[in-house]
Length: 196
Image (tube, rainbow, N blue to C red; front, side, top):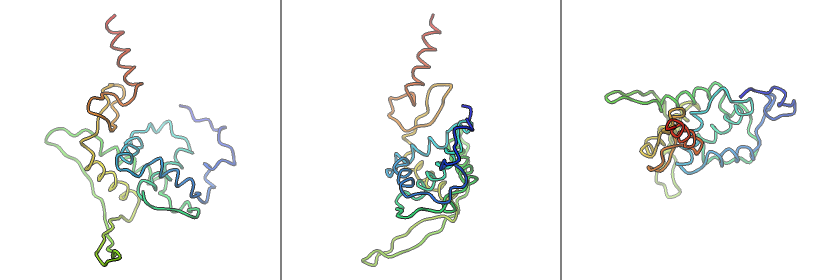
């Protein structure tokens, strides 16, 4: 897809001069990313497998907001958030790379991995019992930790599209072979053309 530079007006919120993000945009990002683990994993899979050539400046800003929502799924905002509180564009790119690396096929007997720097905070419940919050110092480690936890819990539900032109990962039923109807149609059409 070719990026149309004329589509972006100078009043667009997708221009770099944006200083704050409104709570409604952050809430919308949280709804899109989801609060249930399966939905959050589905969003992260889609995020990791996006075609970078098709991203617009607006998509990149939206990704910064959505990555923040992915890292902090229960956070609530009442006032506009400064842009400096969002992951930077470089952080979002690194997060996409980390997610994509975790999805790379691993041959039998091989493994790959990386490091995540963690911190923890112990706070008391009202009755005095300790509650531990795990966290990280930067958004790349935070997002990578969340994605790794989701893959650990729901990795057995991942499916790979059987369309050779797609091969995307998604969460689906065991009896489903294709991630979209488009992939199913493409393979079916090619199969029928091959039989002629």
